Length: 114
Length: 115
Image (cartoon, rainbow over all chains, first blue to last red; front, side, top):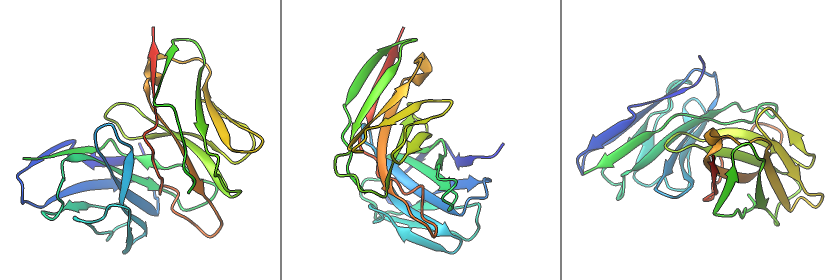
């Protein structure tokens, strides 16, 4: 089945540690995205990538880093510089063609920093 | 992208139509209206989108007013599994490729379908 896989579903880390969240897609989509969601709030864009080896900051990029070395993968690192890292993280992908504008989301990773 | 306004919450009886309104009074001519929904603790799911004509698919219908300042998402026969947060999003689209997943989410409407 085609789709987006995020792992793990739940992640616990100690304060001050960097942590990397995985996102893989087999939809052959050029574009990938990372969003953050806090309780009772909508999603906010962290980073996005329109093509391999290229990415742009979203609205809340501070304290996060990404890489896009392969079309299928877009890992997100939550660094110790992120002041409030506990949140629900969602990865998405989309084709970059006007005839196919639907974005597909993964099931999310819930990160808890203690 | 234009800002949207949605009611915070709505209720609907199972089997009845759910009509979710969205106000986007500052929408521009090249902005589309998209609807996504998010079931608790899952990723959002695309429902439907449109520019100015009414649209229908297997999940829902989208009715956009003639002046395009508001729209309504209609779930014709709501089920318990339709309980979710529904997001109305407007975004600019154009030729030459664009990031279609670059979406601005508000707080959405919490739709509760009850037996």
